[in-house]
Image (tube, rainbow, N blue to C red; front, top):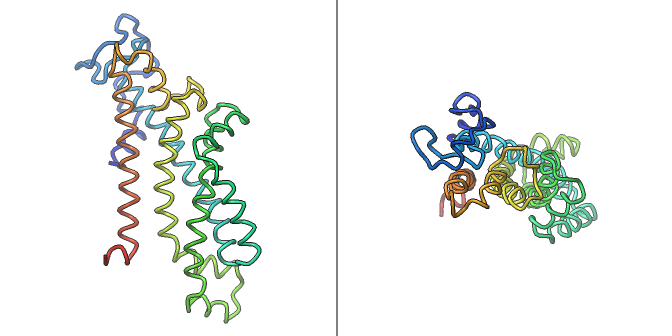
Length: 258
């Protein structure tokens, strides 16, 4: 499922049957047909082409958010988990306070402060999901830092940076990748919801959330306008969640044995 959506998103300019911005008022709100498999929107634009480009944008936002929050959360989680003590106490209390706010409300507040642009959506969602990644990485580091091979690395004089880079991070990498896959799915979902509510990326940025928002006034007249973008978003989110579950089951021996 994930490979399919990545494939169509990456090749959208090549496989889209029409220019997604080409207007044809005579065919506005046309139902699905051989000529337009997903129908058309209120300006007569081919909805299949717009869904392909919208999926591309949503995947780009989700992927960048996953990578950014993973990088920031890994640094914070590794520092808190490895050094412990006051460092762990202060850093994780800040993360806890950060996580008190629901993801959607915090993202909306940040976008209200930053302004509704695609770059600010990425920034806001990265800020929202960094604490969640940090907690996962910290827990994994806490389980690993007292292992024999880590103690051996300290005993031969390895610096904390080298211990983290050579012995701890390689052994918690699987948890980090699994968390990134879930963050990817959450980011796609929240980006679509924010844009649907009108506080995400501006209307000229094609995304699945923007298509859902544009189709809302025509729900009764042209239900396909919201149906196909919604199904594409659902396909993407379910696929990413199943991927995360599969990676977790594969890389966690305890779950595999159970």
